[in-house]
Length: 352
Ligand SMILES: *Cc1c(COP(=O)(O)O)cnc(C)c1O
Image (cartoon, rainbow, N blue to C red; front, side, top):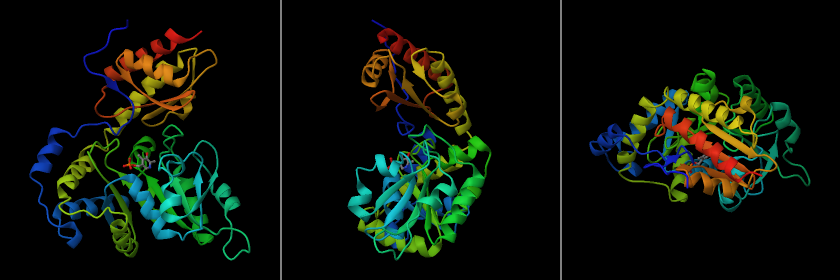
């Protein structure tokens, strides 16, 4: 049997990170108040910090990125509306059908691999007031794109998408759960990436390493309206400064180091692409996510995941023949190298 390490190398997701000692200290000493009265100083500080970083008037702390996405739909759409998104969006695949259940919208997927252009958006827009069409009222961009393998939108395409949305009277929303990964990967200012959009969400609990939370940022009037919808969905909290304090540390400390995760993902991808049983386009590995496809003759994803686990490495099955590995601050470069080698070995051991 392959030897199992003392600690598993967990590459399933960047959500598995443990709060750092500094975060735990910040949580312990956080000043708190009742956030539903707007009186939690730590929540208020986090909101101001993120609004400033994203160049927006105001921000709102919410429990999850999933809720942030639901709130954006509530704010900008009516039941029966059409929302344009990239293919295999989080909104379509990973939110348990919430958009249909909560906001009552339908999605139109455009583009390829998660990315799309302003022209593809415009071609998909169904006008308001048409006899039979559902009106397109919102465009949602996911940057970086999770199922696409951490793909990054070019800043100028985001500007064109935002301009096209304004021209056609659509609201625009950026699901930027990993927006800071996109900014670090391309050397862009996060505020510039957020500027074309009416509303933006970032996650604190992915690569930034906080235990809980996402933040929405946008116009003050929109954020004020979102306070009601957040309560409607059950996301209004009380002394939430205890978790916001960890979010502040995450935003202040952990943005530049995302470059390490990207370099480690590159190492993982290069190692995997050396396997004859793996199909992987290295040009598409730009951030901390590696999505690999299993070649003919290789076992299926479930068998590979199980064999990798035997070798002390955890990865996620993403489809019958697709596996995702994600680098993050709790897996250092040596462990990433070891994990990739073990994954290659796991695949080879079962291939015909
Ligand atoms: C993880 C993720 C979310 C949801 O965040 P949770 O905090 O897990 O609910 C939304 N969008 C994208 C692109 C994500 O990767």
